[in-house]
Image 1 (cartoon, rainbow over the protein chains, first blue to last red):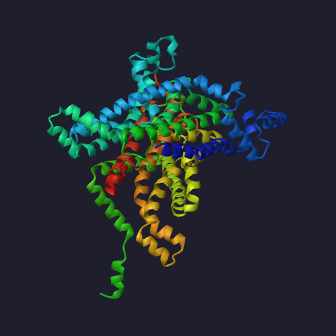
Image 2: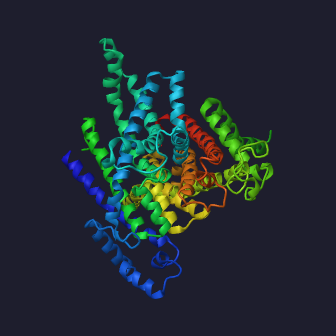
Image 3: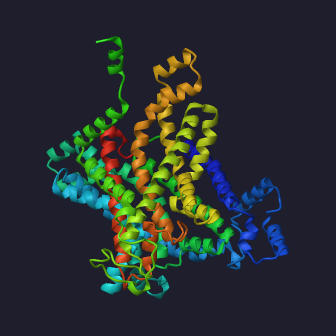
Length: 314
Length: 295
């Protein structure tokens, strides 16, 4: 297992290098000179040249990439001229909101998805099953921002239970904080619950047909314990894979949800930076999120080892 | 009966078989039929938009701004008095066109990359690492960043989303190639000296079609959603063009006074994407139940 872990971590290195390269080269996709684009149309030629030198754009591409890798390795994601601070600092300032939003949404998604999935599997081929799967299908077919806007319409503007936009820090009171993130987390959680529910259902159905479930029932165990501790424990691996994959869609969704609810998170930072043509920030956030995503996938792989002793990877 | 006639009869009529086969498949999956009908309705509405939309989708009429749904304006009007129903109809054209082109381009790139990576060991590692790298970015994030670099245009939305989805196709194709490559008939083809391109395209590619077709319907659904989200974030199709995402984005600012601007295009997206997902689910179950969870 140690050998597997070592190899798995080793394969991260080329992936991360490629991620960093893609992130860096993105600005070259832009038509024209990145420095000129950043400064806008009214900029002097001398200003453009100065910024080019400052950003290292006048060096050969391999020198630029080499410097970029070296900087990332030191945790330096660049400097945002617009925000007047390092990109790392800008991300850290906004990370709390995004992390909490993603965490709350994940909790909602897992609880909702697993519950729906188990109920649908237990009531297989009944109207309840179809209803549950209908809800799940609706979840994957709905634009998250549309759901968010409707939540605002119903629960914020209509019922006035929750604020329509904005973020309250935990320091300003836990209740108000949770209240400010309720609608965004519900939006994101509901959308992400759907794939988890579908996966839970299908893996539960496979497990429920197996002999050891019959044995458990024959032993006279109560149905709840058969379903949760016997069936679900064994159906958890595919569900967990799905949860790991959901992290990516949660981050994607966070970008949109933060914009809908005007939350000052990392996702909104990207969108705002794009509007300002603040390329260093866009690049920095891109790399940062991709690295986190890769690490989460690594964590999921490692978790398998603990959950399923059959997986040895040798 | 002459020999010539016999040959004629033996020749498969691909078009007819395709249609008949399609109907037979439909009969076996209710889910797929419902999905197909929903998508078909949307496609027909999109194609007929110039004939059935009651107003010009770009026609501004300040006298009739923000009107609630009525007999004259089935889905109300927006902040400059444009008819929302007409815009939703025209929006179907743009959203479906975007989705279809994204599916086509990402399949072309993805299939070629997947075939090459799966067949040639030497380049496999390099190509797949590159694809892993691209897939390490969450879909929306990569699409948004690319749109930032490319600029908000319809063609750029299609390019960006194709680059995002192509690695996902490539991974599936490569997986199939790796298993098919070991089969006896491919070995036989190699032994008799068939050129590589022939083995790849004639012997291997047809095996990849099932998963590709199934995946395409899900990709279509995701592309429609992604286009809407990109437009919503202001990194998609230029605001004046009526795509479903754009109409909703415009409506967001007026949500408390004119919710119809947001609600109806959203329902159009849901119907379309739901149809595609149902179709894909049905198709997958028929094609190969083992694909469940893989795609």
